[in-house]
Image (cartoon, rainbow, N blue to C red; front, top):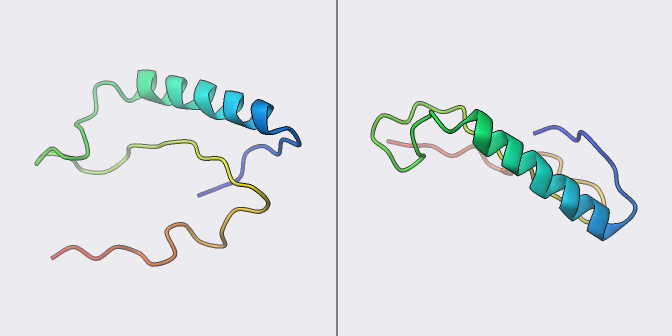
Length: 65
């Protein structure tokens, strides 16, 4: 995860998040869905946080067996 912008207005932050997610969806439309058996990673989403983002997101790396 990386911070790419800081907004001091909640509405501006949400609008930027929506724009980024629309663009990401368009760029990733040919990648398999996360629920698919052939999913191999590489799907991205934009998030907004109040204050500073968490130090690591997710806090613990998921383990799959």
